[in-house]
Image 1 (tube, rainbow over the protein chains, first blue to last red):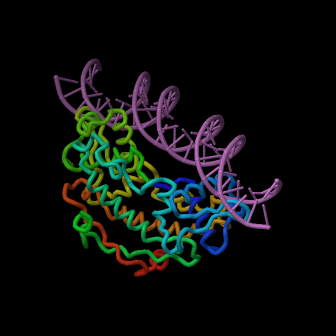
Image 2: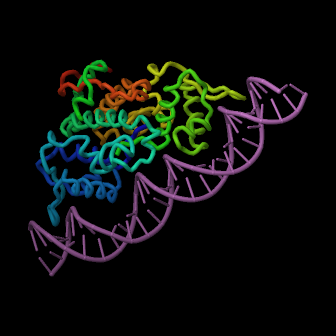
Length: 154
Length: 154
DNA sequence: TTATACAGGACTAAAATGGTACTCAATTGA
DNA sequence: TCAATTGAGTACCATTTTAGTCCTGTATAA
């Protein structure tokens, strides 16, 4: 299904919630209440997002989380990477050389190109888009063979 | 990481192997040998691909698997769907109405649009592309807001 | 100094995934 | 018609990943 993990899904929802009131500081408990999810889980998600540099945290009374930068400068790829690690479709498209089947595989190169295209797509979607109630406008897909990714990337 | 499962990865490799010699019938054991993977696992993968209608199987002596249609008419999305089910990024983008958090979620619509764009991308990559040793040419990504997906799909 | 709120880590339960084994069914051809 | 070949189906187990909880520590504001 190529699905996001549930935590990643939560992360997106929570980030959107924060983005909609980006001036204020948000306590984990308040956010959990707002999005109707278990407190400890939301808390865990927030910690991961903060460690990835997408949120900044403030301890103590009146503390909480705020966006580390404007919502328009945080991408879907950032959020996914914060929870699941770098966006990559196959093992070998993240860690080079770990796969001892390269010889018999024969599709590695092409999967990596597809993977790159997906990452590009996810990088073109910002938190501002996600949080917006208006429909996102996504890049148009021109017919195949308009451009060679190999030329563009390598 | 938004990764494919290992079985899906195997499926792609095996399909590419078959596509490169699409005239012949391929026994599961031969394919396993060719791609250097455990027989039972390859066999399982082949069965799933056959059940999804991507391969046709022939029992008995001299039997084996063949492509159900030309490699240019089998897409990456087909292969992924055969093993993992329909391509969808979130729970709610496949089964409508199952999520009781719609009210507090606020990002469902937009995730679905992203999901659709990813599916479109995967549908634009065919088995013929994957099996080819030459680099795939992927659709060019024009700058955002060129076209509204909502207008295109809904 | 006390209440608030995040940080970090350990731990457990549940689910998905991957892999194996075994038996059955179909086809070919001797 | 029988034996060899090869896929089909199913049940099972091991491992890993994921999700969720809890506890203790630490920083901050009032």
